[in-house]
Every structure is written in structure tokens, then in C-alpha cells.
Image (cartoon, rainbow, N blue to C red; front, top):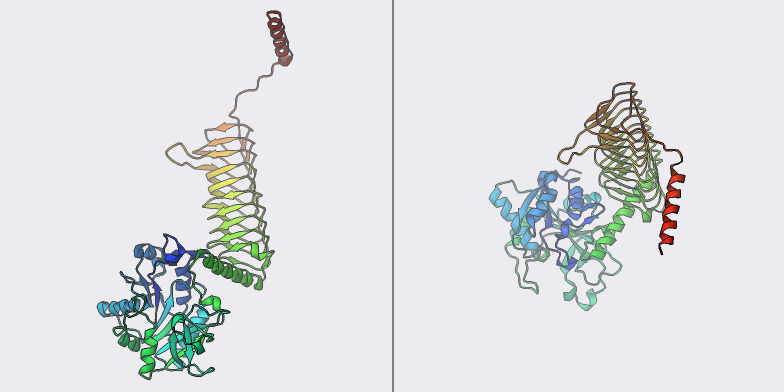
Length: 479
């Protein structure tokens, strides 16, 4: 739809005291990111970022730092005196900034992360179609008790006569099913004309935005309502338990979306998949897998149980065996990881490479078809194609002050339990004998040994036993 003339205000200034948390409410996370970021993402599908105004107050600097990369604007509400007061701050912002006032203003809540772009668009569409001064998003929960109710002029009509708080409901209004979501669209001039008329004559001594509805109805202006398709879309969270309900709903929706696109997820209720994660068709995800952050998984992969993959890119036909941890890693086509591999940031695993049992990598590039299958640490290294890193071999990249790089060419064989002290280069085709400590560069095709010569003493065990027996006999004689 054409949203020219629309702006969006997001209310995100509150403390959320009922959460019993020091963290601002809108910075609590579900689906892998802050509540507020979910709302901003939905808002940006309707209007550009510079037409989104986030009202911040409690720990304003912290909230701003978390979301300012989205490109939105900020309005400061230093005192939190209610929802009406928040919009008074928006009115003051436009007056002081000289920015053009939008024709219509959508108002969202920063703690309602499941709101869908389609729902926001439906509010704007009805608002325009009905030529309304105010449009209210409503929902019909199983139990509306405790919520403010929206009363319509006729059961099937869009027009609203009032928003009534729970404690003010008359006996014949108690069964009213629709609740007020706190999400609105206003004709901005109509809204701004009423904000200064709001009163704090109520139990909480706050300015209520809901009072604007009654003022507009009294003036004969159209106030209409549209129902959300799902009540979960408009529910916020006032406790950690309620927050986790929203988290579960979002993750189940994410899993359902992936399965609908051709991804197999065994026991999706056991998996933790963030909302930003993408997975291509024909990949199989086993139970108890976590896919976090901006992770991207290709097609025809198998992610086995208990693996945790965060902010990583996995190409096609990759096998990730049980218990692997990936963080900021890139894995190319056909690679095999694990079980129990740990790929730390800037690990780049080449096509068809094998990274096996209890292998840890960090800031390393591993070439096509190379293998490190057992008990390795590979940090700050560039490893070529077709190289084999034997069991227990490690790169010593830290001298106590600085990190140094190890460079290993193509087709190199590094024997088991070797220690490569960086900076060091092993040229292509070189061999490193097992148990070596390598401190100097190894030229192409050379064999490097860095260990002491073995000494074998025949009969040593028998001699030692004889001495022990003799000593024991002497001690018994002396008793």
C-alpha cells in the first residue's frame, strides 16, 4: 500500500518494573533479539527508518545504543507520565525540530514484539478507507478480564463509541470481548489538537492516550477499530514467564515457517531457532539444536543434536555432528564437523574439509579437503588444501603479548602431537615428524624433526626390580 504521509511512533520509555529486572523492558530478548528490535523491524516494512520515532526515557542511552544502528529517530520522555504524555513529547519534538508533521501517525508499543507487518498495514488501510481520526487495533483473548475494552457502535460495524478501563466497566459491559491493544493510528492534526487537553485526574496521575478516543467521539469524529488475527500479536509481557510465552510462540512460528519451506526439524519444540535465522530446503535439523543470531544454513545439510550455531554461515551438503559449537564461522560445501568441534570467530572451513573430535579453531582458514580430526587447537593460521593435521597437533599463536600467524601450505603432513610455534611457515608438501616442536620455517618437500633422540636401555626393568628387592631384604633384616 502507499504509506506516503505516514510516520510511526514507538513507545519505549517505560521501566517495566513488574519484570523485577534492572534491564529496560524493551531490551529484554525473545527470538534472539530485543523486543524493541522486533517492533522496529515490523515498522520498517511500512515506512522508512527516518519516519520512525522511538520514544525513550528509562535508561534512554542504553536503549538508544542498542537500536540506533537501525537508523530510526529518537524522542526523549525524561519523565514517564503516561502514554498521552509520550505523544505530547512527540508533538513537542516536531514543534522544536521544524520537521514536517506527518498526516497520519501510527503508534506502536515497544514491548509487543509479535506484531506483524501485515497487521500494521491493515490498521493504516482501514484508517484511510474509513477517513478516521483514530483507528484502534483490538484483539479477542480467551479471557479479557483485566484489560480495557473497546465498545463498538454496532457489533459488526467498525465505529467505536468508547474505550473503557476494566475497573470502570458497567455490569452489561463486562462481557465485551474486545480488548484495547494500545496500538493506534491517528490523523496527526486531530491527535495533536487533543493532547494538551488531557488530564491526570485518575488513579495513576498520568496522561492517558485512550482519553483521546472519547474526545474525538464527542466531537463527532470517526473512531474505528480493527481486530488482530492473533491475540499473541498484541500481547506484551509483564513478567519473565509471560516473556518466555512470547519467546516460545515466536520460535514455534519460526520453526513452522522453515518447515513450510522444506526444512525437516525433528522435535521442533526442543530446538531454539532465532527469528533471523535462515535455512534452505532439504536440510535436516535434529532435536536440541540451537541456531542463533544471523546464522544462515544451506541446503542438504544435517545438523545433529546438541549443536549450537551462532552468527555463522554454513554452505550446502555440510554435516555437523553432535555437540558442535560454531560462533562467527564460515563453513564451505561438503565439509564435515565434529562431533564436539568448536569453531570460534573468523574460522573459515574449506570445501570438503574435516574438523573432528574436540578440535578448536580460531581466526583460521582451512583449505579444500584438509583434515584436522582429533584433539587440535588451530588459531591464527592459514592452512592450504589437502593438508593433514595429526591428532594432538597445535599452533602456538600467543607469545604472552602478541598473536602470531602460522602458515601451512598445500599437501602438508603434520604428525601427531606436534607443536607449531608461530610465527612459522610450513611450505607445501613438507612433513613434520610426530612429537616435534617446530620453531623454524620448513621448506617445500622437507621433513622436519624437532624432538630429542630416543634412548633404549635393554634389561633396565629387570635391573630396577632387582635393586628394589635387595633394598627390601635389607630393610627386613634391620627390623
